Length: 226
Image (cartoon, rainbow, N blue to C red; front, top):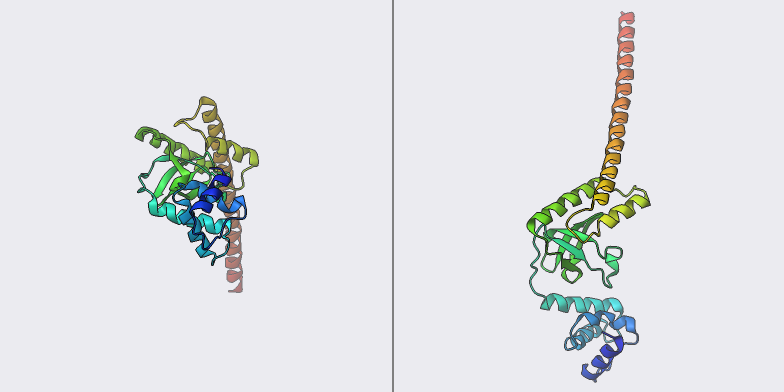
């Protein structure tokens, strides 16, 4: 909804005795999520929270969120359901728009979803179900587990970009090329783990060797003392 339309709506319906109106578009942008009949109520709550002054964007957004939670339908998402994240104007979801996630926890007005690079608690207004069949959700769970085993913060940016693209597919399967690329990454990670374990094993072997040498030396010194 256009900011000018929202402003006109507030000007017509808000309490004229207060006459506290927005001074810029950024302040009223959160009101676009509400129906016109409810916008004045949200604005007046925001003004009250700002102690009778023009409220900030954050205060208006909090007021809108409270009203949305009050009027929202029950959370119908289920554990294991695959959803798409809709970032919209939420800065906390920047970079997550379009990512699919698997519901790992169902809250009253939000869900915790597992994405390609972590878990996030997302409000219902920022989620959209893919409406996958149960078998398709299970397939996506397997893909999610595979990506999680590969991902780490220390990965190169090109690898992260590839995993992010897999985390935004809008179908319950990987193409042949995507499958091959993921297998290459899985193979590379297994090799790195192998060499890391080998290094630890070799390091421990060396430590044990010198410990045994030290023990033998101590025994010899003890015998010589007698």
